[in-house]
Image 1 (cartoon, one colour):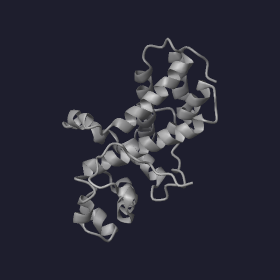
Image 2 (cartoon, helix red, strand yellow):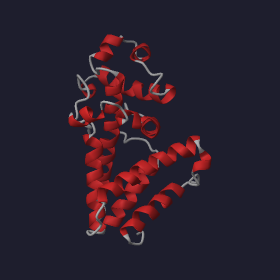
Image 3 (cartoon, helix red, strand yellow):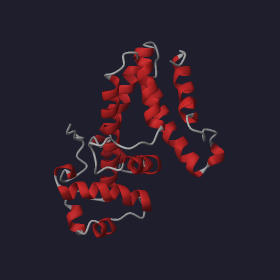
Length: 222
């Protein structure tokens, strides 16, 4: 099956998914940002690795901030795709929420359909670098341009599942964003500030977030 993640948010000048060079830019920018960190990452370093020129990278992305937005948006859209596929297999909303928790707490490889994306590395980028995509002075303008649409689509999809569990719950969107951000914050703490989290064993983070989610909804975990 040939699957493609098509982003409706155009933080790019030319869609990198359409060309071999574009996919090479995405593949290697993920590896380089994961290795160096976003601050040290430059288009010059990327161009050297892909045996191309800075000018060729700029034909796809205006700057590295727009590239980061693309990578993070791609991740959220892939997550939405993966959840939608899994949701077709189950009927109970609690099962959907359980799978959602498992996905956001488990760094796993992206599906084999996307061979140019290292899913584990991209997951690490989301954990450590994603706040830099929106913690900027230009966030309102970027939001107006729809740069965070992929994240919003994912949040609202899970919010609807929350309402299937408890239709009277008044804060479904706030709950889902809290769960998602907590998942990645805790993973960052586990890696860098171990004394700030007790969720260091396998399954601990999923169990912790499950308690928050189902506790808020006043139902027992499935």
